[in-house]
Amino acid sequence: MKIIVTKNDIQGGAKAFELFEKGIKNGAKVLGLATGSTPEPLYQNWVESDLNCNNLISINLDEYVGLKPDDPQSYHYFMQKHLFDKKPFKKTYVPDGTASDVAQACKDYDQIIKDNPIDIQLLGIGRNGHIAFNEPGTPFDIGTHEVKLTENTIKANSRFFDSIDDVPKSAICMGTANIMQSKSIVLMAFGEKKAHAVKEMIEGPITEEVPASILQKHPDVTVIVDEAAASELDDKYKK
Ligand SMILES: N[C@@H]1[C@@H](O)[C@H](O)[C@@H](COP(=O)(O)O)O[C@@H]1O
Image 1 (cartoon, protein in one colour):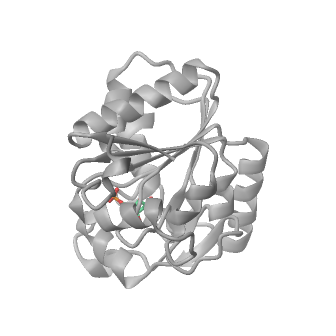
Image 2: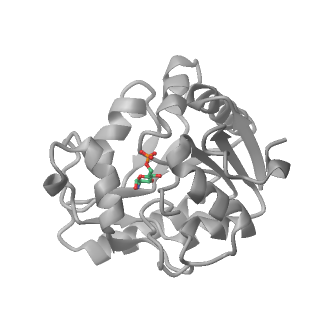
Image 3: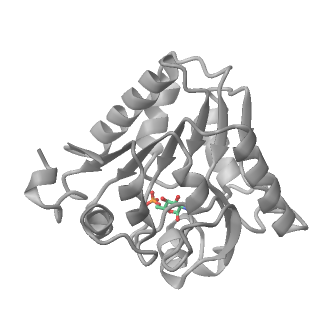
């Protein structure tokens, strides 16, 4: 894993954008994209840039079950607002949280990923080490699936909702196996609340209890962390 430590999230977002821009200029066509507060500085750099996205395909990691695309808390809405409205892509995919047959929607999403292998996958990380919504204990070898969100995640994500009761209880999300098939991965983490998860991901054992730890096995991962998120890391990673 390549670790880049930046002063803060603004610099981290700029660095992540540099990596995406370079990758796209070198031929990356399919991007795996993520939501949450972490990628916002990246998307801000993106929309302010002159990067043309007309030939790009995006495949998002996850979506809440039950939220319509025009629901302001949905990940569809987030992506439109932060990126796609300002930078139109050739095609964008986000899991269908309103599908009547969720199992079929998951299979369809696996097929989309198979047909469009991801060149660069963007990830954030949850405080418990989750990636996308792959919670601790999720098998490493599964594809897109419906996941019941843990109380920790519901609590952490309730900051985006009026009340904790409004947070959906489940989501459709790419599996760890889908993520590991991406050619390259850029993971961003900012703030001291992520410091422990970052340490476990990089220095801890590879275990399904820390979903992000599987990334130690991927040949091309860049981790962009600010000083706060890097604070628990061994000094040798901070150079
Ligand atoms: N499904 C998302 C993840 O993809 C994201 O990485 C995580 C962290 O969110 P944030 O970046 O807001 O800390 O939150 C959610 O659970």
